[in-house]
Amino acid sequence: MVTPSASAASASTALLTDHYELTMLQAALRSGAADRRCVFETFTRRLPEGRRYAVLAGTGRFLDALEDFRFGEAEIADLHSRKVVDTATCEWLAGFRFSGDISGYAEGECFFPGSPVLVVEATFAEGVVLETLALSILNHDSAIASAASRMTSAAGDRPCIEMGSRRTHEQAAVACARAAYLAGFERTSNLEAGRRYGVPTTGTSAHAFTLLYDSEREAFAAQLEALGTGTTLLVDTYDVMTAVRTAVELAGRQLGAVRLDSGDLIVQAHEVRALLDSLGATDTRIIVTSDLDEYAIAALQAAPVDGYGVGTALVTGSGAPTSSMVYKLVSREDAAGTMTPVAKKSKDKLSVGGRKWALRRIGTNGRAEAEIVGIGERPLDDGNDRNLMVDLVRAGERIDAGDLSAARARHAASRAELPRQATQLQRGEVCIPTRYEP
Image 1: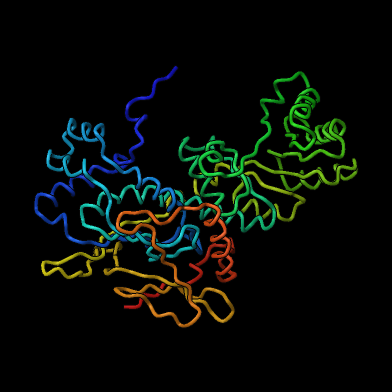
Image 2: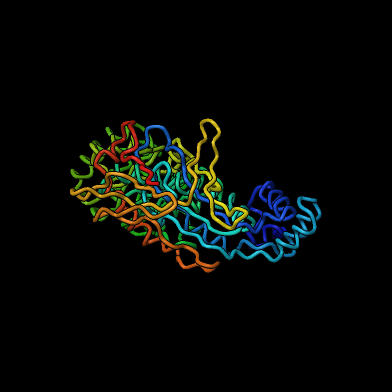
């Protein structure tokens, strides 16, 4: 039996952060600036090259992690023993409970460069220690959801199944399954995602199961006996067409589906469909897997395919594994007690100072025309615009439940609201501009 280490057994998320967050805290505490009121914002300066929109995911996971962001005895003892920060800072951390406000885009919304997807209003001390936690979750989950959205858009009404657990870190796999479901995937192969987040799970067999038996016929018979005729049989271990004939012979016309995992999937799908129909298995579905991405899915729309299983490309963000979000101080209290805008001015990494609010400008055709970001005050609604900012935490109390089903529905509506060119896979510009209103 493996005994978990003390760190593994701990539920605290406090040390899922960078060393410099706490050294900044120590210096601010010593100087007396730690209690200055501040506004931190999370945004991205640019989308991955060629992408026309992005999808916010991970907000619910961030709020879960925030509830467990506590420096208990074990965490304080570790920081003290490694001399990460001094005793006074350890004492402050031991009593840390976030008491500020957090707002931002609702999870599932599409976002664009400059979109203030998360706004933290608190003292410098309380806000600065959340940077790494927020960015590590939102950058990862939003990258996965953005890729997943492109895939489900390409797939149309054909379902997509997330099956990337064997291609990424074991905990990242759970987060990937959640983000993919938010962006329209129907199911996941990951059981922990099913338990933790209620994502529907699915799965039948791999090539190893077929190879266990002396013949493919024996393997199929065993699977059908255990799982019923509605199961999906993997038919490309040996010869595809022979396997399809054997599958229908054993299961009859009630065979649920066959899966293709190699070869020229477009050609094979046409051949298998013709064979299934000739054998009377007209309702048997064809599921395809094998290193699919949004481009392969789009190409397969011309083939008689009924569903897609996606792994590696999904859990790596289909070439964009991060959303490049940053967490920046944009406003702080000055010596007179007045909030004043601040911004980074270094070359190529400019920030826009001042607390932001955002709405989506909707045209007369019901489609989004621009992202309107107000600086210092809320932008004016021209009559049919949609407010994008929601309250997540107020005075330290969580008020957003992080409902995944609601986020899934929200994403479908948000994507449908974008201009039609948003879902084109050809490289292009961001589909709507971001406009700042001072």
